[in-house]
Image 1: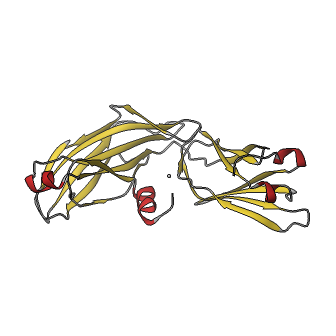
Image 2 (image 1 turned 90 degrees about the vertical axis):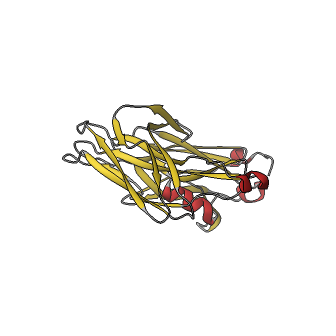
Image 3 (image 1 turned 30 degrees about the horizontal axis):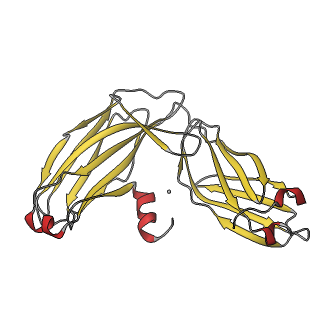
Length: 254
């Protein structure tokens, strides 16, 4: 993960909304917003409170979570994580607990999963007549910590062609990190900043090398001497970049 307030809520709470046919949606609160299994922890719980005006029926699933080089999330069925119950109904204003457990022991690399809590649609004539139905679905990240955590992020190769700057962020460690800020800064030959762009970022899982890019207007690119890339996580910062030569700023659609 588009940084308006709703998308920020989606980024930090792992929630997204599925639109089908009808109007209105149930509302529920879920805590915690992520689960971490440490060396001696094999069971956790999610507490869900029904904030809507009606009884709420939910379906709970769990998937193994990985990412490709574009940072796209990939999900697979798994039996590594056990959840109970998988289907539940919560009366208005009440809360229930979902048990989340694993028998896996810490390995050399972190295990990454997501527990999805999805509202089950119910027949409602009023909503059907309205023609729009919003179904709420929330994804809670689940991590199985490695034997010894080693966060190790670096900025890999950086290139630019026709004003399009492309660079790579590598997670060479054995645990995920969350990118708080990812900034591309262009400076002229006097060291003055003449270009700045914040790029959206999120979870970066271990072993993943993700590519980011941004276009620089030709009128600015022609004045650049260098580009700095600065990435900050909760506990580390990474810096990289490249020197800019005239041949890198060929025209591109702006």
